[in-house]
Image (cartoon, rainbow, N blue to C red; front, top):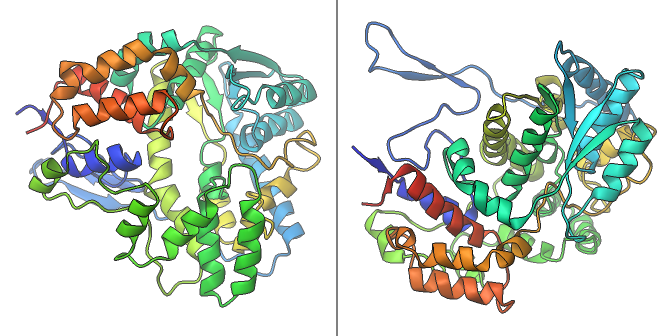
Length: 455
């Protein structure tokens, strides 16, 4: 039997960039153990395997803590977690993006270990729009950290793609995974064996812009429409939140109206570059990954819980685990302890996503006085971003060759002429850029690397 593609997962990846949710993979008939489970294999009957759930994340009751008290408690839990994660008999380092999460870990380490020599590793983008170098420098100087900066050319991405695809095993969402791969490579070159980073904080503390829609849904479900409107107005004025109204509308619409709304907004469930008939023949029903409104009033909390255990975080942890272990580095994630997660998810939603739209509100308050002043007050959200469109444009002939080649034509889920047309329109600025372009490139590389069959 060859390595066949899982058509349901292929649709979720190509259209929405989703991987690693649940027990299935992009390989048909190859499964993975979901989070919080182990696999029981009886020695006398090894074909009768059983998945057993051993742990479930249950939010802790926050009680009547004030915002200030919650911040103080969170600071205690965070510092204790970092203290435990600093235990090491080998050289230890940190990833440092310049955002609140990784900056907090570095600053907490300096607070706990005033005389420890600290090394941080940072990807620095050449594009000012996504560069956080000034914040990296600010944290490095304030904490007395030696910062090792990684700069990447587009040609290096093209050169390393095949090996990176093999390291990851399955397709991944964007070129930020390559930047992370290079950061771990640099750490290994410097002799580092253990790395701490801020993975999980965005899922735990509502760091992504999409969570605003869930908070609006919570306020509406709680009978607070004026608060919902005020929150939405203030949130939409923050940097990078221009599409907030559309996300809220998409969440509130009934399932029957969502396909029409997506088409009107230029976000069809089956864009022209997808082969609708191929998916239909395999029983794949195109549908959005959004959650439906139900009787609960804590939509934000439920969305964070789902991101932590089912969707976003399992995907990101796979990327990080593969990238770190490819360079023989143990990666540690201080935000992801049961005690810290249970405490944060038990807090009022307004402590996490503030009335003025500020994300991670209680954590920002907890870090005041520990992290340099400009970092907790940042309103923008960049993350571990790369100048992806600039890279792909610089690699135009290489991208064009991939999208015109036999490998893409061997993928019947895509329509080659439409893919090539769409790429040219994106490259020339006539169509909006998003990660779909990278997913085409990545899928071609994955298909070739693993000899994937599309029956």
